[in-house]
Image 1 (cartoon, rainbow, N blue to C red):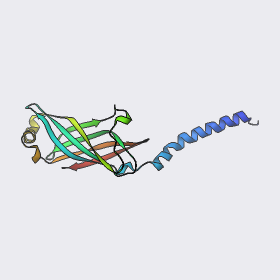
Image 2 (cartoon, helix red, strand yellow):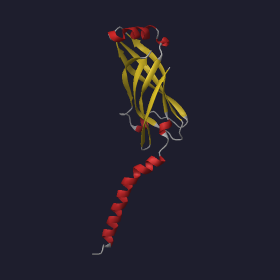
Image 3 (cartoon, rainbow, N blue to C red):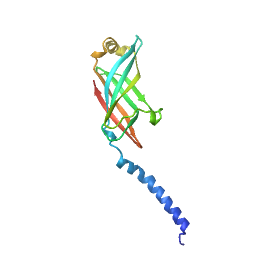
Image 4 (cartoon, rainbow, N blue to C red):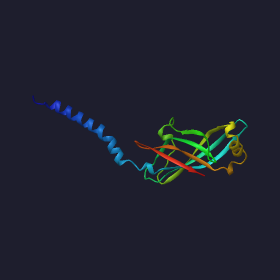
Length: 165
């Protein structure tokens, strides 16, 4: 049985679609920007408001993009430490923001990203460090460790970081 022209076109179209579906991730992976070179660093921690029950802090990260393409981030998951003691984990999220409203990390530039929603609740096990932060936050050695989701076009790369100031 011979294949008619209509059937040959249909089979050819199906083969092209299947090849595209299979090869597209490989093409994007091979031509993707070097997003793993983007760095995230803790740059500042300040106390916005402190009471006996809780403390609201501003955590600032500097994201540096040494690549030739603009990138953005959808979220930064991190754990904050003060003088080596964990204060808890938090997420700075832009996931509910459309892509054109997320912070642009332009090529060969750095951008500061602020998280004003880190709230430290008083607890007896962290009473010493809580009082030290409230009384003299400049004397604290701050450290943050976590993962940032860095995005560009159709590429998403998790970038891990761990640094102190």
